[in-house]
Amino acid sequence: MAELKLSCETVEIPEDCNVIVGQSHFIKTVEDIFEALVTSSPSLKFGIAFCEASIEKLVRRDGNDEALTGCAVRNALKIAAGHTFVVVIKNGYPINVLNRIKAVQEVCGIFAATANPLQVIVAESEQGRGVIGVIDGASPIGTEDSAGEQWRKNLLRNVIGYKR
Image 1: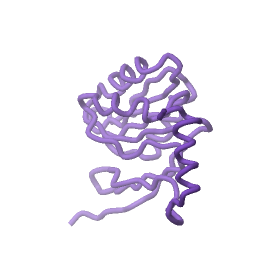
Image 2 (image 1 turned 120 degrees about the vertical axis):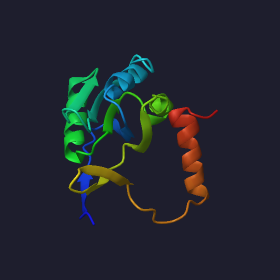
Image 3 (image 1 turned 180 degrees about the vertical axis):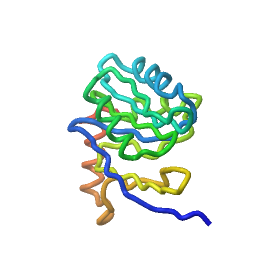
Image 4 (image 1 turned 90 degrees about the vertical axis):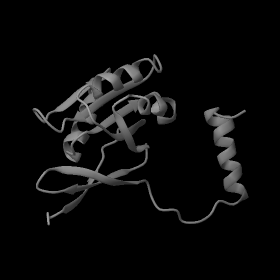
């Protein structure tokens, strides 16, 4: 039986940014996610990093913002799990780009899309590392009351403008 080591990697998320962590299966992931993001909004800034799982086993990178690309690479190197990608975005939210990323042919799934503190749970064997889950934000401390419901509806309708 193979031995398994677990670790918890904290993801760096710059101020006013969101991060998306997912899994893909092909070397052209960075190029295809770049195309999905760059056509989503002219104001979106982003960086992408992808952990190649075979051939040269490099972190492939792309983006339209050098600092965000550097942040994505640092996170990918910290997670260091084959076929994992990290996208750091600014001037947009995951809800604006998630379906575009999920529609990329080689994307297998999304582990997290958040601006909250994020930890990635990584399992390591003699073969390599893999993501087994995430801890996104904090645990709930109660149940929404009518004031909380009103706050949520105000946020969606009046602050963000998602609902009318």
